Image (cartoon, rainbow, N blue to C red; front, top):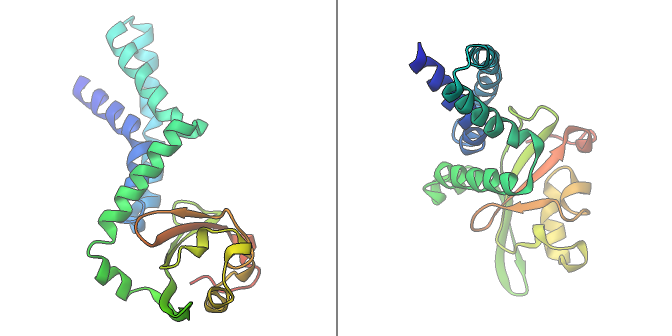
Length: 199
């Protein structure tokens, strides 16, 4: 029984960090993993109380550390959030390998800017874990998706006209998080689609 308790503690402690790592590669089961992760808190709570009442200080220390690690992601502490984003990026890196195959599934638009051929496009959108928002991955060889609106070229704006919601993708800034290479993630609240199609 002790082994099960400690395995549960490891699962709860690691869950908040494993979920970002698995967000892209196991998107279909991510929601199920979230519920399993949260449900595991219930027996851990009772194991923690039992250890406290029995004055098993070693177990109390283990469970206390587990609770700290499990709750830190919920508190949105900046170093923890940076670490979780780094894990998300590593998971995305694995998910997109090989990049050529991944790009072949993207909906891309080519255009010419300053005499050079450029490409933008939407690769995927997921929101299974995050019910109130879509996490959209864009490919942009210019990087303008992460620039202020004033630095975006008319050619880029025309190419982005094919993607929704336009008010977020074309007319807003500070929305794109750089993932790897030419890939960016944009978080879009479902209300922001405003009738536009979610691809």
